[in-house]
Length: 610
Image (cartoon, rainbow, N blue to C red; front, side, top):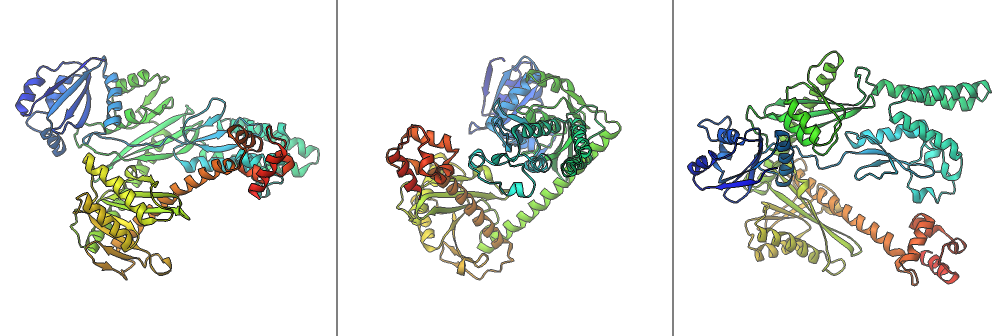
C-alpha cells in the first residue's frame, strides 16, 4: 500500500489544479465534504484519470452532480494493484458507510446446522463463531432452510435436539420420542453404537452422499426382512422413502460441480435487487435477495461487481460462481486470490440447465422487487395517514417510540424503536437498563431513558426525531414534555399512547403535547394502525430485553443467594447436574455426591428450592 495525500480546497478550480498532480496508479480515493465527512469512496486502476472524470462538464446522473457539488477535499491511497484497491475500498466503505456509495448491508452472519461433539451428539441451529471440535454444515441462505433440515434429520435419523442440561436430567422419554422424532438416548432406549451410526449417516447425507446412505439403509432393511423382523425393516423402509422424496426436491443434477452460487440482478422502476441461489453438495438450499443502499445511477457503475466484492469480502465463495452479466473477471479472480480463497471459477456463458437456474434467480429477484415496492407503497400511505391524523407537516416522518418493561419493579428495561419514511430502522434501535429509579416507578424510568437518549443527541448533534411516541398516558407524556423543554427540543411532536378499556388493542387514546386528545379513532385509519404497530414493536423489543435479564439473573443468582455457596461450589453443582434445573430437582442424597457439598449445605440448597 502507498501513502495517502490530501488535497483540500474550498474552490472547485483549486481542486481541479491539484488533481493534475494525482498519480496515474491504482488505488482508492475518498471524497470529503465541508463537514469533514467522507461522502464517497471509490477504486481505480488509474486514480488521476478516474478522479478527473468527475469534474467534466456533463455528469451521467443528477446524483453524481450532487455529490461533486459537495466535494471539499479529496484523499487518495496508492496500492500495488487494482485488486488490492478493491479490498481496501470494501474495508473503508464498511467502516464509513459513505452517503453516495452503493452498499449491500448484510450484518447477520449466515446460519449453519451444527452436530455437537457430545457422547450422544445433538443437532442444532448455529450462527456465529465456530469451534474446531464441533461439526458444522452450511452455510444456509436463511434460518428456515436450517430448521427444515433439522426437522428432516429428526424424522429420518431420530436425532436429539434438546439442550444438554435437559438431556442429562431426563428420567423418561420426552414428546419428541412419542411422535417418533427422537430415539431417546437420554434414557438409553438406543445404544451408543447405534446412535453413533445414525449420526454418521446424517453427516454423510449432509455431505451429499445420499446414495451411500440409501444403500446402507437398504441393506439393513433386507437383513431385517430376511430375519422376519418386519417392524424393524419398516423403519428403514420409511427412512429410505423420506430421503428419496427430499432428493427429488433438492437434488441438482445439472451441475458438474457440487457447490455453486448463482447470482442474478434485476431492475424495475429504479429498484435493483440481487438474488443469490445456493447450491451445496448438489442440493438446492434456497436463495436470498439483497437490495443495495444508495444506488448511483451512473451507467458505468457495475452494481453486480460491487455486490460480489462486498459479499465475498467476508464470506468464503464456493468453487463456482455463475453470472449472466459481464464483469471484470480478471479483477475479481485476483481479488479472490488476494483474499486467500481457493481457485474460484466465474462462469458467465450459460448453457443447458444453468440458464434455467439463472432464469429462476431472476424471477425471484423480480418477485422480491414487487414485494418491496408494495411494502414501500403501503408504508408511504401509512406515513401520509399518520401525519394527517396528527395534523403535522408531511415531512415529519422520523418516529421514535419508547416503552418500559419490568417484573414487579425488578430488572427495568426501556426500549427505543425507530421508524422513518423507509420503514423500520433496526440499526437505530436501543435498549436501556434503568438503574436509578425506584422499583416500579415508570415515570422515573421514562425520565431517565429520555434524558440519556436526547442529551446525547444534543451533545453530539445527532439525528433528532420529528415525533416521539410514549407508551403511556398523561403522566409519562408530562415527563417527556419536561425533558424536551430542558433540552430545548421544543420542535419535536410528543404523543402519549394510552391503552384502551380492558387493554383492548385498537381502542387506544392519543394524548398530544398541545393538549389535544384523540379518541374513538377508526381502527381502519392507516395512520392509527402505524402508531399501534410502532407501539407494539417497542413493547416487543423492551420485553425481549427484560426477559433476557431475568433469565440471566435467575441463572446466576439463585445459587449465590445461598450462604456457603461460592464460585467453585456453584460451578461444581452446575457441571454435575447440567444446569440450574437439575439442581432444583435433586434431593439431599444426590446433592451430597457433588465435591465440596456437606450435609448442612445440601439441606440448605434443597430447602432454598423447595
